[in-house]
Image (cartoon, rainbow, N blue to C red; front, side, top):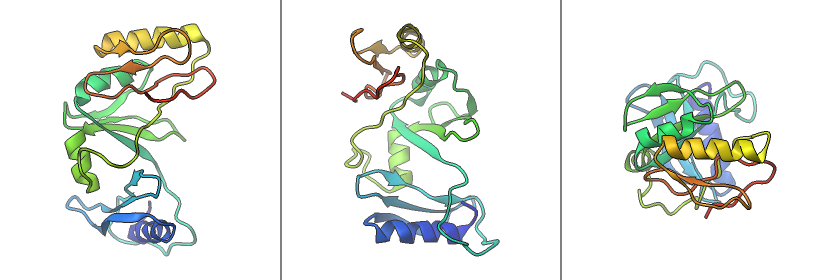
Length: 191
């Protein structure tokens, strides 16, 4: 977002649609301006602006300037290897503290943090009671490409394939729930 007014406007709009405010809009220690809310479906959102000062009025509904998905995992370094296999590259990596993957234009970024740290940042319990699952997809040309990718990801991240050859494959990395990482036409369900 471009400034605090957009963060506040988005928080107000989300609240009007039934979202629960978990952290009110405020200036953070490192100069960002953020808020946190839980959507009625359970997803936790954290709108943020790099600037703590408004440079202009909000012309209409706020529009994000970028989107990031942050996953709370037990071991970010082990999960890093898994996500690098399909071609994601790390922009910033701080061991088991935080890993930020580079996003392509028009694609959201991916971040990995320890579960406890992400829960604290979002103002929620680290045992979770919100969104029950997440599906990450990677488009592959053929079923063989999917199987090759998942086998390589499992080997590189010390994970294991948890579904047989019929239907979508899934991989578990150390300290994470099974999440699909590739499909060839239909979205798999998380076990």
